[in-house]
Length: 358
Image 1 (tube, rainbow, N blue to C red):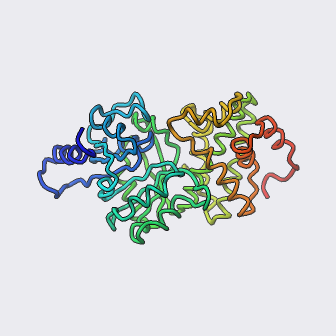
Image 2 (cartoon, rainbow, N blue to C red; image 1 turned 120 degrees about the vertical axis):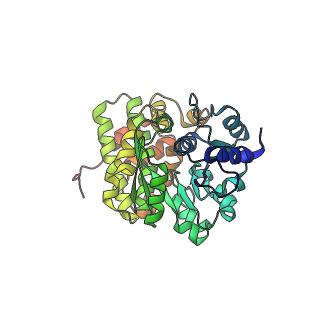
Image 3 (tube, rainbow, N blue to C red; image 1 turned 45 degrees about the horizontal axis):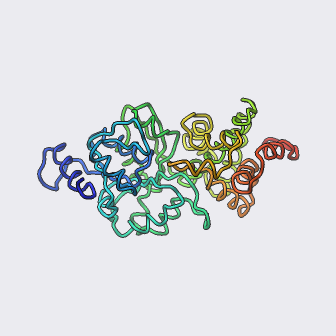
């Protein structure tokens, strides 16, 4: 194995561009996080001719990417582009001009702290993490704002939308949203990712885009529970619709724009995650509806179902913001307080009658 993937990436970059010095026509990119979504993003970039350093916490994953061009643990059955260089050297992976950050929300603060001083001041950071921090209840962008140098934080872009990693890795048509305070940063990310398979729209509502990507995972668990209990298609449609209403209420309380949730990072991602068979969060819900406990389910999962922990954060955030989120509350009660899912459904249906829009 080539240590850290460093020499491997340098050589394949030179081979691709036909140069023997550091002045390269195409700047390499980095992806921090070797899970399914991080690997899929790396593959999309590499397929466009961009040399990519893919940092994986697991050294064996980085080694497999270099030696076999596969990631059997997180994205089995997919042959990866040879322009991806796996690495376990975080400092090296932070040297790129564009850095995609794709790690689970519950570990993101520690990873950002480890990389903050290594990032070039003019780098564009792309946050593709979908979740809300437990404890301090910060959105990913708020953690970056707190820990990065001001210029790096200013160039932050949030990437979200309906995008199963496997379908992206297979080159199937996908559309997502890139949101930033800096239009030029969002446009740069749009340009580096987009092609005939991947379409990226730009936006400036970072909080709305992040909140949609986080909350939809909780609603997807609810939809999965409904399907696991065999409650029918009417029930699923009702949960998605009322879940979207909760998403919008929280978004408005946090300063996001209501229109954002009608887009790809809102209703688009919600529909995909709550109905698609590749959804980890929907799968967790279905297994809960089938009688398993959350501990039984998550102990056997290699990939993270963000909605389980995000349900706790959303529950706490709703109390602080005084936002009515009954569906998210019941998911929290089932996942963390041991509530029977049938009782949760009954409590939702017995709530006081009210107008649909209030």
